[in-house]
Image (cartoon, rainbow, N blue to C red):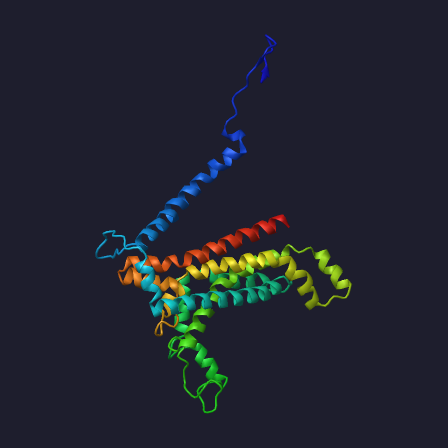
Length: 317
């Protein structure tokens, strides 16, 4: 309402627009993102459910519903069961290593030293480089003949001589032996995700009040005690978010395994994402490929719920 200066009568003012309503404005601003996600992910998810309940293939795209036959078939498949086990082992082992190493690196980067900017630049490099190109570089370093790792081990006397710790052979066939192949894939994935986790850990360490740490040091608390009783509890929500975020990346990633081993030797490094690709795309069985991919949905949904809860707790704190 506004007062008319001539008549002295209150007149209705201009109607409030969308800019005056924060709720409507927020909905309007976020609507494009919601529509994009619904079109890109929601449509694909619905199609994956339909495909998993049908017998569709690349040769016959006719959608004939067969119920849960595809799920029964893949559960009876030994390669699927091995890929499922490998997926969880690969994801949790790599993320535990990422969290531990990123804490060490972040703690070191909190100190002042010459060349700190160069150290940060080198640590961030794996995250900025295309993962396919980086993995091809690692593929050369794991070469069965020209691997620099083998040369270093031979130089140190750990390989290539009688009585050597790793054996008398001249080379370790990193990608040809089941245990070594899985370890090699995990190392590359840790190298890839370490920069992101380090940045997250740095943010958590930087948020701790310096006065609190200085007071604990004055009181005689050792560095180990300060870490256990102050640093870790205060950064635990951020560590949890980094861990869960890394799990999502690992469960859904197929680049490292596909480029390095293609699931070999004999499916010992096969994970669900690569097996979905081989079965559904290269094998042409879209129905079973969709069914395999849907096994990740409950896991990823649970991780997403945990991430949202962690974010909410950190906001409350």
